[in-house]
Amino acid sequence: MDEEQRKILLESVSRFPRPQGVKLSYGTAGFRADASILSSTVFRVGILSALRSLKTQSVIGLMITASHNQVSDNGVKVADPSGGMLTQEWEPFADALANAVDAEDLIRLITDFAKKENISFGADQSAQVLLGRDTRPSGESLLHAAKQGVNSIVGSVAIDMGVLTTPQLHWMVRSRNKGMKVSELDYFEQLSNSFGCLIDLIPQETMLQLMDDKLIVDGANGVGAEKLEELKKLLKGLVIQIHNSGKEGGVLNDRVGADYVQKEKIVPCGFGPNVVGIRCASLDGDADRLVYFHLLSESSNKIDLVDGDKILSLFTLFIREQLSILNKNESENINYDQSVRLGVVQTAYANGASTDFLKQLGLEVAFTPTGVKYLHEKAADYDIGIYFEANGHGTILFSEHFLCWLEAKNSELASVSKGSEQQKAALRLLAVSKLINQAVGDALSGLLLVEAILRHMGMSIQKWSEIYQDLPSRQLKVKVADRTAVITTNAETVVVKPSGLQEVIDAETAKYARGRSFIRPSGTEDVIRVYAEASTQEAADELAKSVALHVDRFLGFGSS
Ligand SMILES: CC(=O)N[C@H]1[C@@H](OP(=O)(O)O)O[C@H](CO)[C@@H](O)[C@@H]1O
Ligand SMILES: [Mg+2]
Image (cartoon, rainbow, N blue to C red; front, side):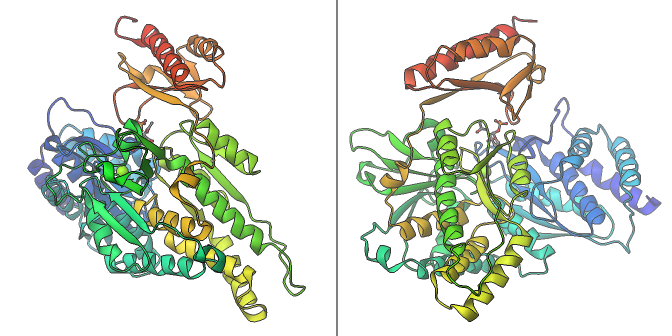
């Protein structure tokens, strides 16, 4: 690092002093905290993003959001060149940067890291970072901090992409690195065109079936509502009513949004008894999660939740159907020798009934630890990898290799059997690969795919919900002295430490029909999470409670 670079850093770091006594860590969702203490962290993540851009010689993204957390919180995370999450290898450096005590310490860290990673500084180097933020009021000043961070690395530029959903920013980073157009309009057009394609390819028989066109969307009073309002204008054949748009005076994520609906299983604010039976969807605060639901009766606010597991199952049914049409070797001229590897990825939070359903379809179901970076990575192992967290974050990944094959197959079919069922299946799969965000889970693109598939299958939300019956489940949180004392293995389903705890969990679980329970330290909150499911709600509640008591006994404040 030359003197000029050093001077710039010394000067700019001092403008963003680090709050005393705060230790932050780059968790599954980047850094998150009360917005008032975040400017130094966001500034430093700006520096990190510029370094990442220098290292990869690609465009990097920096998103300011705290997703479904309360409005006074905020956060920051980095998108890698592929549009995915920051590589896990850089997370320790992110932690070290955020917690460096002063400018000297910070400069030393940067110098050492740059040496190790072979990153060179200087005006002839260029780095580009795309910045985005959600609608939180603290976003603007934090964006300013991020910009200063990026600019304090010589030769780096920050480009403010404005208020965006998290998946939009990830999509833009990915597209930019592929040399494609990246404006918001490009994003909307890609989604609406591929949605239109899927609608045009709906079989005549189902087109004739009466289907309720109307969809009501809970926008969590956040950025997703704003963007859906725009996207809606480009969509044909879909009636979307948006509630909780943020314009009616509601507060971001306050008793609204996908996280609330999924956890509480009641209608969000702003939904009256008149929505009974109507298909409803809920986005989270940065629109990377999606769940569906319908209100069961006018006299109660209880809903029938159609969660990430059921979205995953619906997507899987559709993809499987298209692959089987494509593989029907009707024509002598076409050689379908390619066997497509279709894989499904879940976490331990997936309802056991969904896993059974998928396995009964003959699918390969893989499990990873919680956190989309793990699911995404695993899904990339397949030709088509479908992943979802139960909470509604997920997408479908298509491998480059498979897409090349599919393009070629489609051209071949177009010349020998244009308009055949096989060609339509190929076109549908190609449209899905364009509609569904290849960078991260995206509530807007997910919603359009759900809508297209329901129409394709002539399926109501009630019928969709009945593809399998969820096993009753319960989640609890336990505050403990030190949550890092819990070490798990086997996709977080087995406790290794403290020793003896897994044995008592096993013993409790064995008492219940269809019992399953596991515990893990949360990556985003200072708690141990307990999950239990069983054949009845009472049993699931009881199992969760008894496991929570054991956790408290082993790890609670009185235990050390
Ligand atoms: C049980 C649960 O919903 N856990 C969530 C939550 O992680 P925890 O590590 O459980 O706090 O936040 C993550 C980031 O949003 C999300 O990926 C994950 O699914
Ligand atoms: Mg989110």
